[in-house]
Image (cartoon, rainbow, N blue to C red; front, side, top):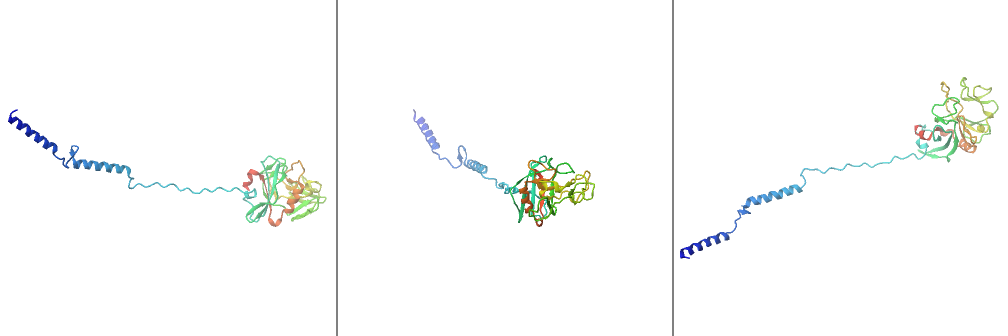
Length: 280
């Protein structure tokens, strides 16, 4: 190789080495200007932060507040279900049955202590009219009227006074219960000649009328056609028999109830199917 050619090759090698050794300046990264690359990275990081960070004005939804639930308290007994008793009433008798068409039921007695009704006795088996309870009783239909009633001021009986707090009349001959709607004394006690109609000779009805209290149904009498009925008593039961519309108890139970009843307590008797007691 000539000297000229060797000089030229040596010069090119020097230029190549100089180019490879030239340091990278801060103006380029991966073939891009360094500033542009840095801005891209910053924007990418900001975008990622924006995806992760919560929206500045977003508000957390509040959970609806739940009001504490209160259970409705069930009445403690049948007397506590009653709503129409006079405020002065401190004794109540509840006569109930499983429905309208049955003549078998129970009698419960309650006394009011403060604002609470307390049982006076255990429940007693009772008999009703042959055709059970009826909301709109009429004369002679063999049903027991539903409703709330007071007691007559006098109790009656073939036997001597068993020690009641009410007035007491021991029955004698010609003592009647007037059940003749055509007379002025319809549905009341009468002493004298037979008032006619279906009137009852009280002194002869034994054992039912050994003792009885008068339930003030249709008292005073409301004129109606047909008549609304008469002679509804709380009296002695004939075992195995229903009544013509009265309520009957075993004699020992009846005497216990009659002695307990106190006119000063303004007693009431409620008669209805068990499911209907809330009406009263």
